[in-house]
Amino acid sequence: MMSKENKNIITLTKTERQLLLYEIFTRFYKQDLETIFAVLPMKRRMLQRDVKDLIDAGLVSVEFSKEKQAYVSSEKPIAFRKDEKKPNRTKHLKMLSRLGTLMKRLYNEEIKYDEKYDRSKYISCRDVYDQLFPNENIRTRQRDFQTLCRIGYPIRYNRKIQYYEFYDNGVNRAEFGVFREDGRLKRELGVTDFEKQVIPWDVIEYPEYIDDDYEW
Figure 1 (tube, rainbow, N blue to C red):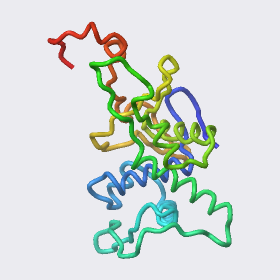
Figure 2 (figure 1 turned 60 degrees about the vertical axis):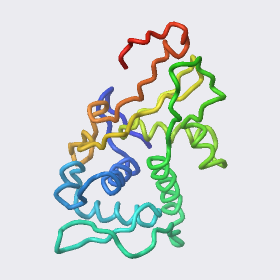
Figure 3 (figure 1 turned 135 degrees about the vertical axis):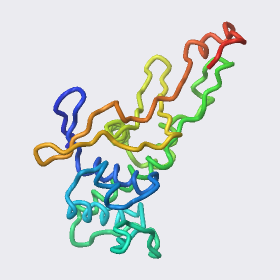
Figure 4 (figure 1 turned 90 degrees about the vertical axis):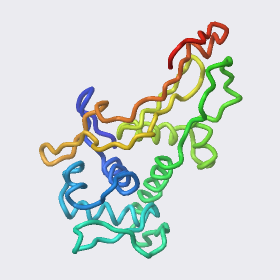
């Protein structure tokens, strides 16, 4: 269940916390304990459990180096590992694997600003989702997009043009806006989110008014 306390502060779910840890492994320069705990102030035991889930979900292959006090690449192959004894954990691992895949592979095709927008011409993140997970239903997709939004990947549906506006993740984040309060990890929304894609809808809808001297 997603927990929301007010407009700007949320309590991270287990899945959201693990996805942010996954981002550290895939987009941060270092994965030492000091770096991890600086942006995700969790307990050491919780970190160990989360790393195991990421490994078993088939998202990373890492091991802890006592010498470096950091997680380093492992020679073991990346593979999904079903938990035969705990079916609920396997269900969680599948969801974690799906969301981690979206963080890595989801995209919007860049929309040209010199022609009138035509939905059929462009691949949106919705199309990519359906290609990656054709058996998932609309409600699952909506929940997945909502989860990504809560950890700083703004995805919004524009009803006017029936298109998903996406985020620009070209620059890596250095922090997540996460802090610890009353024994729980909470996150401030917006401040450390990835920026939204710049889509000049006014120009796209009326390309005949393009000014050659306009600076983007």
